Amino acid sequence: MTARSDRPGKALSLGLKHLAYLIIAFIFVLPLWWAIVSSLRPNSAIFADIFPFTPKALLPAPFTLEAYGGIFERGFGLIIANTMLVALVTMAAGLIVNGAAGFAFAMFDFKGKKFILSAIIISFMLPFEAIALPLYTVTQQLGWLDNIAALIVPSVANGLAVFLFYQFFSQVPKDYAEAARLDGVSWIDILLRIYVPLSLPTCISAALLLFIFQWEAFLWPLLAMPSQQFKVIQVGMAAFQQQYQTIWNQLFAVSVITALIPIALLLPLQRYYVQGLAGAGIKG
Amino acid sequence: MFRSRTPVLLIAALLAPALIGLVVFRLYPVALAVSDSFFNIVRGQQVFVGFDNYLSLLSDRTFWKSMQVTFWFNLLINPIQIALALGLALLYVQQFRGVTLYRVLFLIPIGVSLPTAVIIWRIMLTQDGLVNGLIGIAGVPAQPWLTSESLALYSIIAIATWKGISYWMIFIIGGLQTISPEIYDAARLDGVKPWQRLIFITIPLLRPTLLFVLVADVSINFLLFAPIFMLTQGGPADSTNVLMYEAYKSGFIFGDMGRAMAIIVVVVAILLIIVAAQFKLLSGREARQ
Image (cartoon, rainbow over all chains, first blue to last red; front, side, top):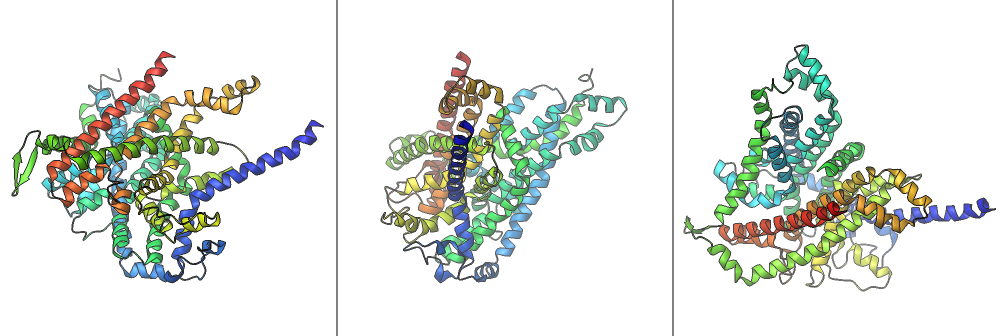
């Protein structure tokens, strides 16, 4: 009897659960969904069906791709390529530089190791915004203003990425390296042949971290590229917003492309991203 | 034995690029901010002015108003974000059929950059935008979300929260995964109610993770810049003029780098004090137990 009265109760609570999750998911998805829908409408129809609100406001009708054509005519193709270049070079260089440092911290004992490691961890707790203004002066001294190096080089060394690699390499049993050393294998070979292949998941976490950091960079490219000859996506988008306040469908199209590229990377790789960051939070 | 053959050159080569990067692009700028705050630019010349930039901040009304806005903003946004991130993490780790789809949807704001979120929300929050349309269903009149002195700061809090909580959720999920399920099983057998489990088991065991999230979240929100720059430029009537934006304005609009650096130094110093206090208060309690 208890089993029978339980069943509708369970179904009801499962139903309520789905409802609660749906409402929250709706809040998370709504802005992006509305942006996608609006980017597929003609500009004159952006605010249609809102007053009074009808569900038609959330459907791409009337449908047109003119907004996407429009933004490429305004040069957003080049801006996307620029950002890709900056993000991919930072990612590749960052994997090598931070991976090497993480390996050194994990494998060797040396004087001041603890101190240097905590300095690195603190450096990643301090957000980039805190040093953006003085970094502008440093860049000026180096003569790198308006140079693409100003966007890439300061972002390559990344405390969080060093920490991710350090944490991973510390967990690998030292026996591997010791056995290989006794066989006369050089450290470089040990790193490249044993540790790098093992660390693939960490490489993916760190790569995503570096890529997304650059893809989302806004304040720094705004300061470091005063003439804006070389535009990256977030700055290009903000400038577009200020210049063409009312070409909403194109503004939405830019936003959608800006958001969908990292999302397309994150969704299939979310497991690595979540595991990497979650692990860093526990030990950090 | 392993240690005696430490290859010093190799270690130096492996560490050098990362360390040079961190020193030149992190530590040196901090030192530079401190030293620049003691100078003013007069007719293109750097002139040493000692503590003048700091002293004039003391009697600077705009600065104090901005300080007030920054603190009020942070007193609201940080607890809200952490509480919501914790709630979201608890939902994320539930196991039932179909939860995977919700999990993916919860992660979407991570892929949406803050400037993108700001642009989309700005249009959603205009007078005839989607948000006013939706509240119109319930008969609520349209609100001037971003252009009214009493609402703009809260709208920015809402946008930053929408964007931020998925990211903080990830760290809390990591913390939740370290709590062994047996503790919950035992509690359930003892008849402990779900909300009691949350307050007496989950939150205390999550303390290290929550401390990390608190410190990292406060650091980001204390220095938040992009939404204010893009949405309100500190207005209306300075109601969203946080210290970071005041510093930017000072340096890049009014060309007063000395004052800008002094503000940055003050902001970072306050932030460090807050972070140190959080560590002391929160990890101290843990040691006593």
